[in-house]
Length: 149
Image (cartoon, rainbow, N blue to C red; front, side, top):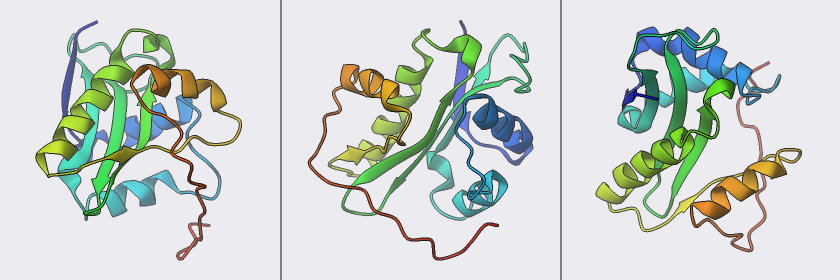
Protein backbone atom coordinates (compact mmCIF):
# COMPACT_ATOMS: atom_id res chain seq x y z
CA UNK A 1 0.00 0.00 0.00
CA UNK A 2 1.39 3.33 -1.03
CA UNK A 3 -0.43 6.38 0.25
CA UNK A 4 0.31 10.07 0.41
CA UNK A 5 -0.78 11.96 3.54
CA UNK A 6 -1.68 15.57 2.92
CA UNK A 7 -3.99 18.32 4.15
CA UNK A 8 -7.59 18.22 2.97
CA UNK A 9 -8.31 20.11 -0.28
CA UNK A 10 -11.72 21.46 -1.24
CA UNK A 11 -11.91 19.00 -4.15
CA UNK A 12 -11.71 16.11 -1.64
CA UNK A 13 -15.06 16.82 0.01
CA UNK A 14 -17.31 14.32 -1.79
CA UNK A 15 -14.68 11.59 -1.59
CA UNK A 16 -14.14 12.21 2.13
CA UNK A 17 -17.87 12.09 2.86
CA UNK A 18 -18.13 8.85 0.85
CA UNK A 19 -15.24 7.44 2.89
CA UNK A 20 -16.93 8.42 6.16
CA UNK A 21 -20.15 6.77 5.01
CA UNK A 22 -18.31 3.60 3.98
CA UNK A 23 -16.54 3.57 7.35
CA UNK A 24 -19.81 3.98 9.25
CA UNK A 25 -18.90 7.33 10.80
CA UNK A 26 -21.80 9.48 9.66
CA UNK A 27 -24.90 10.03 11.76
CA UNK A 28 -28.24 11.57 10.72
CA UNK A 29 -27.89 14.40 13.24
CA UNK A 30 -24.42 15.45 11.98
CA UNK A 31 -24.24 16.79 8.44
CA UNK A 32 -20.75 15.76 7.27
CA UNK A 33 -20.61 18.57 4.71
CA UNK A 34 -21.28 21.10 7.46
CA UNK A 35 -18.63 19.47 9.64
CA UNK A 36 -16.14 19.87 6.79
CA UNK A 37 -17.14 23.49 6.20
CA UNK A 38 -16.68 24.23 9.90
CA UNK A 39 -13.27 22.53 10.01
CA UNK A 40 -12.07 24.52 7.00
CA UNK A 41 -12.51 27.66 9.14
CA UNK A 42 -10.41 26.44 12.10
CA UNK A 43 -6.99 24.76 11.96
CA UNK A 44 -7.58 23.52 8.44
CA UNK A 45 -4.01 22.19 8.33
CA UNK A 46 -5.01 19.57 10.92
CA UNK A 47 -7.58 17.98 8.58
CA UNK A 48 -5.62 15.17 6.92
CA UNK A 49 -6.42 12.81 4.09
CA UNK A 50 -4.64 9.71 2.86
CA UNK A 51 -4.64 9.46 -0.89
CA UNK A 52 -3.91 6.29 -2.81
CA UNK A 53 -0.58 7.15 -4.41
CA UNK A 54 -1.18 4.69 -7.25
CA UNK A 55 -4.22 6.71 -8.34
CA UNK A 56 -6.57 3.80 -7.78
CA UNK A 57 -9.88 4.98 -6.47
CA UNK A 58 -10.55 2.45 -3.72
CA UNK A 59 -14.22 1.50 -3.31
CA UNK A 60 -16.04 4.67 -4.25
CA UNK A 61 -13.75 7.03 -2.35
CA UNK A 62 -12.19 8.82 -5.34
CA UNK A 63 -8.61 8.02 -4.31
CA UNK A 64 -9.11 9.10 -0.69
CA UNK A 65 -8.61 6.03 1.49
CA UNK A 66 -8.23 7.63 4.91
CA UNK A 67 -8.88 10.76 6.95
CA UNK A 68 -8.27 12.31 10.35
CA UNK A 69 -9.67 15.60 11.60
CA UNK A 70 -7.59 16.96 14.50
CA UNK A 71 -7.79 20.08 16.60
CA UNK A 72 -6.06 21.74 19.54
CA UNK A 73 -7.73 24.07 22.04
CA UNK A 74 -4.66 25.03 24.07
CA UNK A 75 -5.31 22.36 26.71
CA UNK A 76 -5.65 19.13 24.75
CA UNK A 77 -5.86 17.86 21.23
CA UNK A 78 -8.66 15.85 19.72
CA UNK A 79 -8.88 13.54 16.74
CA UNK A 80 -12.23 12.98 15.07
CA UNK A 81 -13.30 11.30 11.84
CA UNK A 82 -10.39 8.88 11.82
CA UNK A 83 -11.48 6.75 8.90
CA UNK A 84 -9.87 4.06 6.80
CA UNK A 85 -11.52 2.60 3.73
CA UNK A 86 -12.91 -0.84 4.59
CA UNK A 87 -10.63 -2.57 2.08
CA UNK A 88 -7.56 -0.86 3.62
CA UNK A 89 -8.19 -1.76 7.25
CA UNK A 90 -5.45 -3.75 8.92
CA UNK A 91 -2.76 -2.24 6.68
CA UNK A 92 -1.36 0.27 9.19
CA UNK A 93 -3.06 3.25 7.56
CA UNK A 94 -5.01 4.18 10.70
CA UNK A 95 -1.78 4.11 12.71
CA UNK A 96 -0.05 6.26 10.09
CA UNK A 97 -2.86 8.84 10.17
CA UNK A 98 -2.82 8.97 13.98
CA UNK A 99 0.97 9.32 14.07
CA UNK A 100 0.79 12.25 11.66
CA UNK A 101 -2.06 13.90 13.58
CA UNK A 102 -0.15 13.46 16.85
CA UNK A 103 3.04 14.89 15.31
CA UNK A 104 1.19 17.96 14.05
CA UNK A 105 -0.48 18.46 17.42
CA UNK A 106 2.84 18.08 19.24
CA UNK A 107 4.41 20.67 16.92
CA UNK A 108 1.73 23.10 18.16
CA UNK A 109 2.73 22.40 21.78
CA UNK A 110 -0.18 20.07 22.50
CA UNK A 111 0.59 18.05 25.66
CA UNK A 112 -2.13 15.38 25.34
CA UNK A 113 -4.66 14.09 22.85
CA UNK A 114 -8.06 12.50 23.28
CA UNK A 115 -10.38 10.47 21.10
CA UNK A 116 -13.98 9.49 21.64
CA UNK A 117 -15.44 6.10 20.78
CA UNK A 118 -19.13 5.96 20.01
CA UNK A 119 -21.30 3.45 21.81
CA UNK A 120 -21.60 0.44 19.56
CA UNK A 121 -18.07 0.87 18.17
CA UNK A 122 -16.17 -0.51 21.14
CA UNK A 123 -14.15 -2.83 18.88
CA UNK A 124 -12.05 0.15 17.82
CA UNK A 125 -10.83 0.36 21.42
CA UNK A 126 -8.26 -2.36 20.73
CA UNK A 127 -6.82 -0.22 17.90
CA UNK A 128 -6.39 2.77 20.21
CA UNK A 129 -5.02 0.54 22.97
CA UNK A 130 -2.25 -0.60 20.60
CA UNK A 131 -1.43 3.08 20.01
CA UNK A 132 -1.06 3.73 23.75
CA UNK A 133 -4.45 5.32 24.43
CA UNK A 134 -6.03 4.45 27.77
CA UNK A 135 -9.31 5.33 29.47
CA UNK A 136 -8.81 8.65 31.23
CA UNK A 137 -11.61 8.42 33.75
CA UNK A 138 -13.67 11.15 32.09
CA UNK A 139 -17.19 10.88 30.74
CA UNK A 140 -17.90 12.61 27.47
CA UNK A 141 -20.98 14.79 27.45
CA UNK A 142 -22.35 16.81 24.58
CA UNK A 143 -24.77 19.62 23.89
CA UNK A 144 -25.80 20.64 20.39
CA UNK A 145 -25.62 24.43 19.94
CA UNK A 146 -26.40 24.49 16.21
CA UNK A 147 -28.69 21.80 14.80
CA UNK A 148 -27.63 20.26 11.49
CA UNK A 149 -31.05 18.89 10.66
